[in-house]
Image 1 (cartoon, helix red, strand yellow):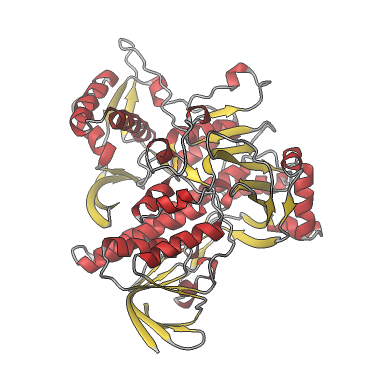
Image 2 (cartoon, helix red, strand yellow):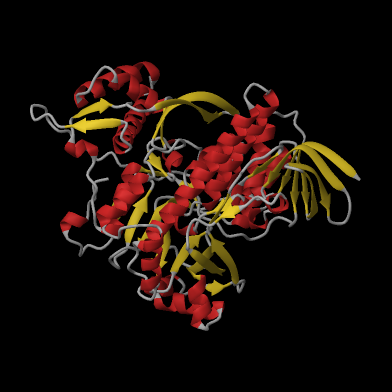
Length: 576
């Protein structure tokens, strides 16, 4: 038997289900088939999400189902990481401002800035069921045994047990199996020497480390000398606990994964307390967590989404978020290709480059996090070699300069990079390196637009099922988009340079654009964070006029604070 579809997707995890659901959301006439080798529900790691996922869940129509499942609301994370052993908190939304709110709740207000901690056995099934509800053909327990290739084209998928699937477009969402990627011989690069393994199990009836409001908590990320532990509550009774450590250490230790896992839990006092009444599900598993990046993410009639296209170490909890962002943009690109209104080569090249930049940025952040962690008392040589390999000066100032060279303007986030705002990066850098990079608003009171030597270039903006043609300036490998907050700022900066005049210009624009005062306040905050990112990337030059006042402000939206009351007062509050 042979079946033909408009789009065939290999893999029914979050990236595959998201691609399928968004294709049908924006074009119900498309025929979409999802091939999944397993039967859902099934366990999978990658349980800690980031806030951008919420918007995509809302877009594909399954926010309500995910919220109704009662997964813990992720406010942020607690770390034992950096130069000192005290715990510190990193939050998307300050826990003291998280208001009591009945659940299930809508995707609005404070929930726009939070995330979920999900039991993937339930979460993935909700997403795949949503794709089926929208009219996708979902074939579980269906394994692709062979990929038929003609040059750079996929011509058919042969199924184990007989039959085949053909399509106009193919999407590889098969995770680390990389079914299409391997068949097409797409080369991969390994841009870091960071090669870790993860050993993990699930526990019943562990205590939550912290309870915030109704259903809110923080994950725990705890250094244990030879690696780090994640502690992620997945629901009222179930918790995921994993150990991440260098593959080389595991090999040289002479110990089994189960021995090292038990040792890591035993040496962490917090875990012993949280697990006092808990029992293991005895599902201990080991997986390889090696960062890599595919050279191409799109070809003649195929796309790579999710982990098959690249992987960044899980220290920043970005795996599922990267996966669904790539899925969203792959779906938009396929929809745009079918409309035939944009150049196909430009659409595919833009998609591929955007995904490569995103994954590479997260790999870069992971390198920095590991090299800056002095809690790895048994891995000193490992972190020193890693820092040397990536050319990172381990002084705090050197680390900040190294991060800045990657650029602080993210085309998705607008005022940060790697999924983090510039303010949050500054705050994290202080905790890792005890160095507070000055805010532009602490030093300057005049801001001058500088486009000298920049080139005008088309760029893609992904919005509501479409890939829109937008414009940008490029210079030295950095991008200045001309839409959203950037467009407002470029407009104002062409007419004003004094900070108070810039604020007045933004106020006039936002009063016309945003009648709702809450939205207007949020727009102000984002615009000012964007202005600071433009200063950091060199698109705006800051100067100080002694005849004008400074306006130092804390515009960071992810506060960091020390948990210990014994910390000196000057370290309890960090300007972001």
